[in-house]
Length: 382
Ligand code: MG
Image 1 (cartoon, helix red, strand yellow):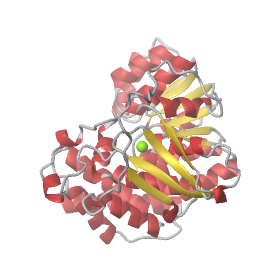
Image 2 (tube, rainbow, N blue to C red):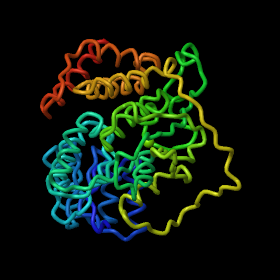
Image 3 (cartoon, rainbow, N blue to C red):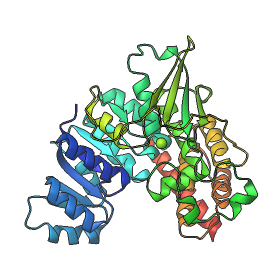
Image 4 (cartoon, protein in one colour):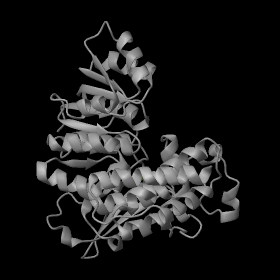
């Protein structure tokens, strides 16, 4: 069980909810990091008194240093700061809640120190899953997923002694705000439409990924890496109610599922308390008043991001890093109203066609593929 955490990405949605759980469980906070949100991280630093606070942005860090002068919190910036936070001596668990590829190096650094990783940064496993899982094995670092689907699976495989008994992982998918729409109907969808997620409250990037179903595609890759299973053993199924958080089918036909209200604090809390469970102060699922649970197949022809992700998952190598990097830039452009909703899969597909791919890549080759994918999408947009 966790006693002290380093929280990477403390001002985002997962970061703030993690601090709620920290407050609830009375954990120590050794380090906090964020990109540039001076006001919020200052407030958090005053409440949790970490030894270290990091803002990636240099100027914002200087401002924070000035503001925290009267405290014992040291302020750092840049990748150097993130690495210091990830390897903080007094943290036994590192929560990786930063968005994007920026989380990769700090996660690897924390793994090398043998820390428990409460993993909320998908990109780490999507782009460099093999490297990350090999390192975790080598250094004896536990990886406990925070993503709700992967936490559900993690909970359903507790007690499974032989991974060969797993027939299939089934990730559930809400379908997002545009479920059931046609390709033509999707064309006119705007940033505001995409940000209306039916069940979950999340950051902007992941909410758009939920609307395109890229999020589920990335999660399929994440699950393949976490459990070292081939694509044919990882499925996604539409479940509009977001109550069944995912399932594991075993070879004897048994299916285990984890159910609960759509609240990220449950997987966050479990990542902190694993292998134990703590009392929740929140409202829990009431089976008698919850809506009927329904399941359907996803429409990969309309939501092409899911199909592209599956194709990359099958290819492996740097394909997933290209997929992810291209998607981050395309979604960023969509959030600035610079491209349309259907341009997101088109831009990702174009990047996959132009960036040269490498099998069994090194970390440097993965980072290079990510950069090339981003550059390809920027060039296409211009
Ligand atoms: Mg998820």
